[in-house]
Length: 177
Ligand code: ADP
Image 1 (tube, helix red, strand yellow):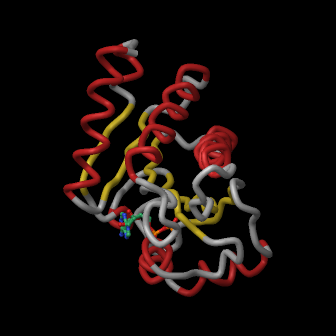
Image 2 (cartoon, helix red, strand yellow):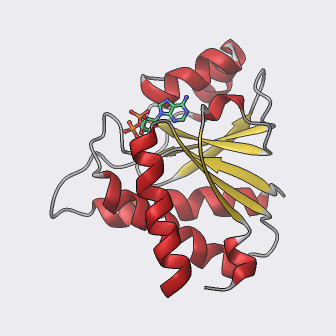
């Protein structure tokens, strides 16, 4: 793979709510009114004004994305996307791919240069980490190739185990892709 693209992707173990990037992506649910996991952590850190803005948006279908301000976060924006609840043999892969594409498209439209993604759908929504990681990395690389304005995409994993899955796949993709 093109080394210029490799350099625009970072993978790290972290709490996504602490990052000083232009935008962090939230693994939200269709109500956009907050929930558990990373969604709950983002709402707690950003403060109650986030919920007020989300209420006005009025929800988001699975696979789509919406943007709000970051409020008390260091990130300027939050891009809320709704991952699929994993179902073997269903359309989960297409929907997860849509989440990454639509989030990145919103980033370009809002002049966002640095964006961090959690492992969308890999918590309570039950997506197998290896399959989700392949979709996340493949979709992002294809998008970055066509959109030079995005300088950095950071994949943020909460656990060491998930970090290793992303690192191993990205390393093999970089060598063979
Ligand atoms: P979903 O409902 O889309 O499955 P979850 O929030 O349950 O979303 O989980 C998505 C992923 O985000 C999981 O791998 C979980 O470990 C991770 N996660 C939870 N909190 C954070 C955080 N503060 N920063 C980064 N990742 C997080």
